Length: 558
Image 1 (cartoon, rainbow, N blue to C red):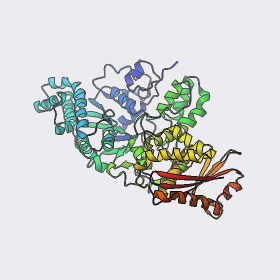
Image 2 (tube, rainbow, N blue to C red):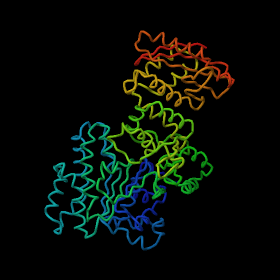
Image 3 (cartoon, helix red, strand yellow):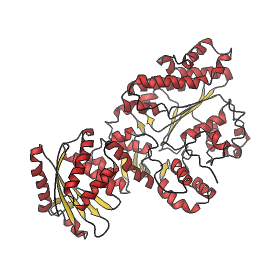
Image 4 (cartoon, rainbow, N blue to C red):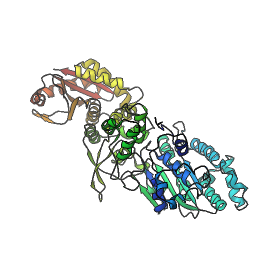
């Protein structure tokens, strides 16, 4: 029986301890044949980025040459030919992973910088042997020691990576390969915590000094979730090759292909599980390649092929939650289409400017794409960056409710919504009103558009589409009778009751009762139940709902 490498991202450990390994070593051949000076590859979290970077370090590192001789036996890079294996263990390599430089408890740049100072002290300590060489300039040694001792200034830290590369080049007499994993993790944390400007200034200097006009650099590979705009962090770096989820280059390096999935299921004697596995974890398009989520696949196999959302809460998505809390009615309707299995058409710029994230209407879907919550269904126009996007698979469809719930507040749980819709569909207007009141108290202060009918309309549409989409059809602003209803819920199963809702916003709490009755009367006068009658739905609950800030009044008839 194969062991599944859940959470193991050290290439040597996977090979030596005989975990199942999906061979991605052809990536090494591709880099040897034609690498750019600096390559940035963006993929969702848990798509194997750290393991792949570890694989590169174990192959190229001159320090690991004696330990790595057997690790590539029988793998694709060895089969590619002796000329490729001749490159093994021939380069000084620096491998940094920045994914741990993020902590919501860091409320200031000073707190993050303190951790950066400690982290670099530990990383640099592994290279103390460099200071024993007489070939290295004494000034480099002094700066190096400041970092190891944890007393380096912010400016010294910003230049520390370039200094380390210089020392390694002088020591080995060869240019350095630089590998940086999750380069954007500190920047995302800084944006969420309110010190983006300080962090981006530091990271711009830290990365640019190492990557731009640096004669000690052979080549560099960076990975991350998002492509932070060149203007924000890579200004003046003209040798940057960006390989995002929209590009074909290296498309099959991260994540599993169909052939790799079939081989894995054969190895564990579960070939019959392919249709289920495909429904739950396939569906990603990286460039033109079809890709499975590797984290979820490995967990699925390790758990005796039980299908469930394994990707849930694998990482924080505060930016996603922030964006979801600021969407307008149009984008909620687009989310509704996605939850119904349809695609949406958007214009994308796959670079991210954090300082403009609230102003950019495409930022939500850009981030949903890069973080793995959406995938490209088809390319509409390369020249105009127009794409059709969809939810990739069953796992991600189920995760939307979890992430959206997380964005609403700590007092709002899934039980809150389950109860809300039980009351709504059973015609229990008083209990429905009490439950909706609880949700509004937790949510409304987050939004900018409270006390506008479009806000409440969009909010109710988003909730109903999200939680009832499996068993009901939710429609908004559809013509019926002598007008257009606000929101209607049509059961897919015969014999169930339908729901129709009309919303009004009151100028003050004193007129809420009147507005709720007015909304209910509008349903009757304009005969909105006509559409239900056409569909053979005999029982319909009619709700007139008045909003005023966090307050509501609900009136019902049948």
